[in-house]
Length: 483
Image (cartoon, rainbow, N blue to C red):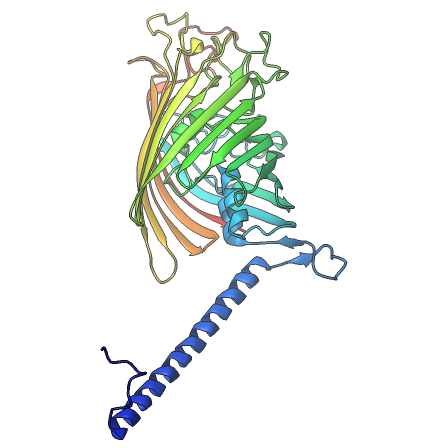
C-alpha cells in the first residue's frame, strides 16, 4: 500500500516527529503565500476601482442610499473609443465589449475627449500642389513649393451613456479645421466649426445575445479602413471611409462578425451617395452596406482576420465636372476585401476596394483620349511593437494607392508611403513622428478638369489641376492626448 500521512503508526517516534515538523513547515509556507496572493488581489481590485472612478461624481441614489449612477472618466477606454486609426467603423462592437468586461459600468455616463496637435514641413515639386490628405489639398492653404505648420489638427469630445442593461447612447463632437469641408483658409470661421461627428443609440448586451442594433449617424460598415500608421490615415479610408445616417444591425461573436446597414440616400456626409428621384436630397433610405469577417486563431498569439464588404452607393457616381456632394444619375456600387494578421507584437494588414462601374466624371470631353475609369484603392502595411520600460513603442510602414484614371491620365493615381514611430508615454498619450511621400496629385473636386479658367474667366476644357507627376515630401511630429 502506498505510504500516506494517515499510515504512520508503525514508524519510529523520531521519524514521526520529523514528518510532522516538515508538514507544519509546508502549511506555514502555504499560508504565507495565500496571504501574499490575497494582498495582490486586493491591490488589483483597488487599482481597477480607482481607474474607473477617476473624477467620478454621483448623480443619483437608490432608496437604500446607494449610488445609482456616475459620470466617469477612463483615459485608456476614452482613447480607444475616439481613436481615428483603429476600429474606425467598429465602435459599436467596441462599446459593447467594454460594457461586457465592466469597463463601461451600468447606469453611468462615460466622458471622453482627445486633442491632436501636429508640426510639419512639406515640400513639393509643383507650386501649390501638395497631395498629403491629412489637410485638404487646396491652394488656399498651401502656397508655393514649401509649406510648414504648427497647429491643432483636431479635437474631440464625446460621451457614452450606459442606460440599463440594453441601451447605450453615444455621441462625439469634432473640431477639425485641417480637414473641414468649409471654404477659405484654415483660420476662416467656416472651417473652424464644431460638428457632431457621430451620434447614435445602441441596443445590445453581449452577455445575453450576440445581436445588436444602432440608429443614428455612424461610420458605414464598409471595409477595414484602419491604418498601422500612428497618425496618417490610409488612402483607402480617404477614398471609401463612409459616414452616414442610417440604421445598422449586427452579430458579434468571438470569431464571426456580421453587420448590415440601411443608409439614408442622397449625398451623405462622406463616401456614400445614391440618387433620390434624380436629386441628392436624403429623403429615402435607398442605400445600404454589408460586412462580414471571421477571425482564424492559432494558439494564443496568432490571429488572422479575413473579411469582405459591399456598398450599394459609393461617392463615385457624379457626371463631369465632379464636385463633392452633387447628385448622380445612378448609383455606383463598390466592394472591399481585407485581411489582418497579428502574430504577437507584429501586425500585418492589407485591403483592396473598387467601384463596380466607371466613375462618369473621370471622362473629360475636352480630353477624350482618357476613358472613364473605375475607382480603386488599396493598402498594405506592417507594425511592430517594442515593449520598453518607459512605455511601448510602435514602428510602422504602409503603402496605399488611389486610382481614378487610365494609364497616362493626369488623374491616373496618387500613391502614399508612410514610415512612422509612436511612443505611448501614457496609455492614453501618444507622441509620434512620420515621414510621408506622396506621388501624384488627384483632388476629388474637378479631378478630371473644368476648374482652370483663362484671364477672361472662360473654362479651359483641356486643362486639369490633377498632376500624376507631382511629388510631395512630409516630415511630421505630433501628440495625441486623450481621456
